[in-house]
Image (cartoon, rainbow, N blue to C red):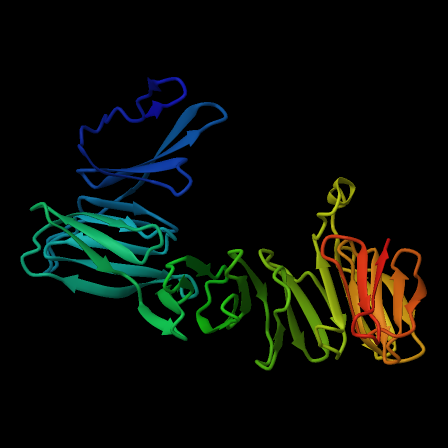
Length: 401
């Protein structure tokens, strides 16, 4: 073993059994290696960084010469026992996710995949190529969609290892590496986005909305992603299949089911918060997540994650999604038809059916009337300035906090 920091070498195994080393593989984290010998014995060496020592143990003895040793999420040892019609295995390599192994033999190769639910190996396929001769080396590409095969005669071939490929609305190419792993490629740019379910469940259904937002279903989870920011979330979900998804915000996805709105932040594998409402119009829900960009003081505020929504037509609630506590509640004297939080979630603008414009201080829960009539309004992005239009087409009001 070579130490790159000190440029020194250490002997891991002095081979007292006088048996040649025929194969070598390392664990995914690089801390442990397995060594196969000509007599079938396989030894394990674990590197202890704390004591700078190496622990050596006899792992097991194979029934034949272990010419192939591969380590992914499982360990594979293979060789030729002379009992099979096929000539012996002589090379092997795990896919990048560590679940699928390819093992080369004479005139072809085999592909096996470990099924975690059944704790068993599945024979995925066998590829036979006449006059390929001995497959001496195999390797995967980084996303696991292709495998390269090198032969004793100097030939190198590349094979497609994907389960299937399909076009989605003519704008995306979907490549299924496994039933639980999917690569989405945007056409014609070729930008790739990888989905890999942590629950190892089969991806049953997939939809892409507005060419940006991804919704995928498995039997146990929901996968929600933003293809622009390359962020994806996976949350446990056991719905009835009639959920409604709200994808107006590039940072958060809303899932509406049975009178409850669930909010999931892209890139986080848990539900951010929930609120009970039946009013799903984008004008009646205002969400602010990590929008702290106006000043240095604001940028130091941690956890600016709030949502304003209607509990009923006359009641507005502001919920702190970090603590789960209601930050403010206001009951108005007539129906509300528009609400919006400012960038820092300090103030809430709302308009009622009489077209009156009101401003609510979330911390003190005090509100005041800004305009008696208002047809158009909104916060100026990244500021505390409000622009509102009154009845006249050319009459605008500007308010600053």
